Image 1 (cartoon, rainbow, N blue to C red):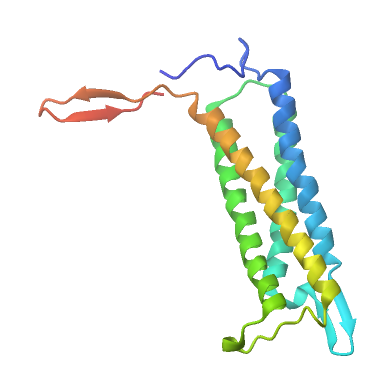
Image 2 (image 1 turned 30 degrees about the horizontal axis):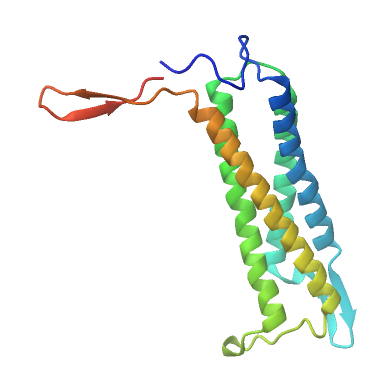
Length: 192
């Protein structure tokens, strides 16, 4: 049977208020950072004698904007749910765990592909005839770099949330029990 008490829970099953407050703040932080990355990228455009360049011209940056919006929305919703004092259930713990994992990988992917585009904008790639463009569009590149940097900070926040939610979920289980079957093979069972 699973553990009935946890260091972060009192007898009623509610999280200790300081733990609940810390989790809520940890869930609000990525929301603010996602919104900042989103706004910076949305305003990222530059026009000069070579033409106009906007974030919407590059699919990776459009994905970054969408991923930041989804992550900001999830962070707000999960912060509200985490702030409400009620008993922790296994389904709630699984939901937080799975969604935190999913959002971690979504924002990591957005940061990774955007980093590649920023790198190509600064360095170019002669083998695919992609010339560097940051000497002509410096302001565009600086804003894109700032947005990508914020995205990686968000990724670290979500990695921390993933660790927090996985601890909360898996600390509710006892270690698996091993037993010998009638054929002499040792098997492991999980008890909830």
